[in-house]
Image (cartoon, rainbow, N blue to C red; front, side, top):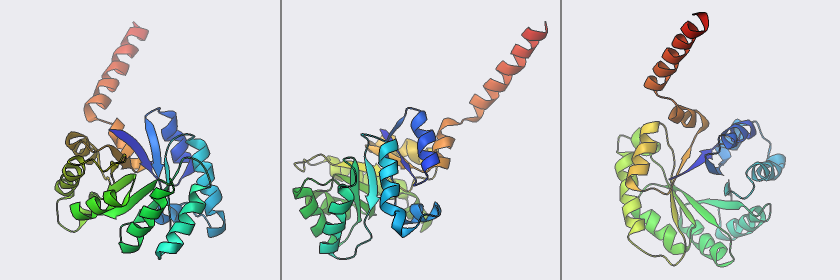
Length: 221
């Protein structure tokens, strides 16, 4: 399973890239807003991310609401850098836009997916990536992991005639990452804080503390 980082923060992306384990970046309007970014700087900000992650997919989300506007904005975003993936929320308008963009060679990441039928429609429309949300399903008292598993099984049942990868999104914890990997999700896109928690384990911390204490004994012997 590949790791994407779910952020628009340039420093977080740079640090995660330095680990050597990152395969891409996903962003959305909320994540960009958290950086304090302005509308006029949005496209240049996406370019900076693409430069940090040269050759790796970077999802930049369209905020258009009609099919035609999504197509126009999608093509403009795709023109910013060769590794831009246009992110669209699932819907009637965006399915039509995905079909047009895919036919023109523009990669689409269909987001805000919460059900297998939504995912199947996105795949049929030509989406390169499909992003089912896990944590947000948990938030409403349902089972986000079970929902993701249904989607992964349905998508992997079929050949859609183009490469289509599942991005497990709205990841909150290492447990979500493990569950996504066990069921065969292609990618997990993880916030920086949750990504750092994936590196940690209490027994690792305990072992390091013991190594350091024992080494102090060696130095002081």
